Length: 122
Image (cartoon, rainbow, N blue to C red; front, side):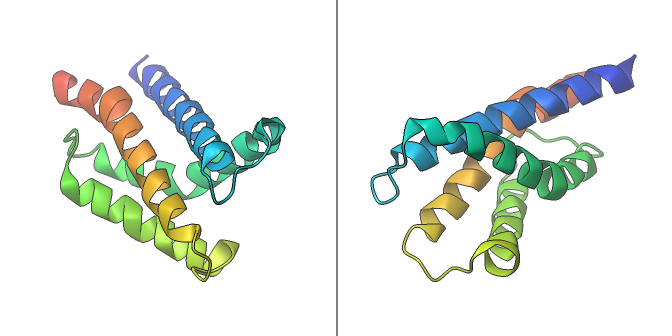
């Protein structure tokens, strides 16, 4: 049962983070995409978070600490590596705010929805 609750929390964290990052990208002035692009952004960010952030989230749940700065630093490092090697590089002026916001959004969602639950159970 706990495994099912854990998976449920991970999915909520993924969906919330994907939606919030998509909203940021759509309404961030240098990008300012059409809100209709949310249909494309949400699944793309969901997959990126699932592939790169969920393994870290599961690793961090071994010693859960909500809002731990080391977790934020790790999410920032992974976001930089993903942006540098996988996506487009860090050449544009919009990539740094996206890296920071993607890390902050996932860190806060993870801390509120996942790590805090594990802190209470351990």
